[in-house]
Length: 394
Image 1 (tube, rainbow, N blue to C red):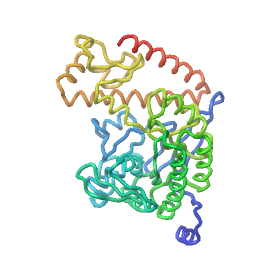
Image 2: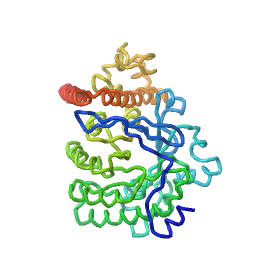
Image 3: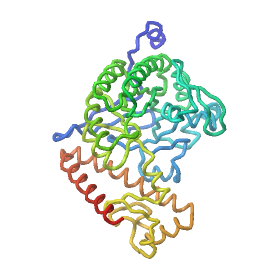
Image 4: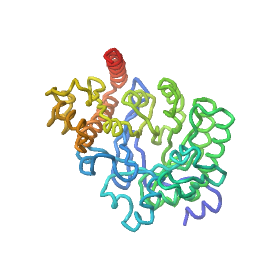
């Protein structure tokens, strides 16, 4: 009743929600933060990496694997799920958690990034976006109201505002028009949001322009929400430019709310951006690389399809405790990949996700112990040395 009265009065203030962020510790040497996000499906320890389950499945692994890996939260995507199987069916099946047999927290993307990446197959207006399905060419539309309705039907713990995600290298006049529209869309999202089960996060855009980022952060954060995200990074710019942009933008977001950097990134990206105060990350990188035979290890990247591993009895990473490394040799994994066996995808994915999630556990420990500055410095030094060695060995 209170929410309805606020909507009628145009009041966008958010009452105490179902998602609550607890800031536990701030590293003394950096801007890194240790926190806990309380959700209806359990707590999430931050900083956190969130595996991407675009269509209700993290490719190559099952929910039991994810639990064993201690994945605390996974993502689903509004665009893909609305097209197939459709939110009415998921609602009939009891919501997304029950449909995919996942009882831990979930976050859903608004679908905006996917729609805007369709390029020639979509048209953006003040109302929203009209687009053609990448599956069969059928016509659909997404508006702020429609995106929120779908996400609430899916039942995610965290839902994202519908925004436009132009490339960070887009020209300034277009970015300015896009930011203004995204702000207007956020206010429509807030009015459509019921606040019953899902907590809405706003998204700050602005490309690589610091003044636009600052202006948009002020506009988005003026709306009291349970959390805020940085969008429009890692979409074409150099990693160094992205890191500099996040270093400027992350502190613009409220200290007492979770800060989510969308679509990022590599292990080096995660460590570098945690250092600037980011709490939440997602990226398809570990699962996509796994399916293509690229594995992340404590000794650098390893391309398992290479002939050099055909007779290698060692595990992928001697320092790793994942099921793949405890059980199988590089030679066997290389054989599976060369033979096109589905098991190769699963074992590679288990390893890469274990690497990313273990890295974040190490990050949380370093922050708690006030040694994240040295942790990050050492990690960057190793990463740069390993990449230089890999480049020389090509």
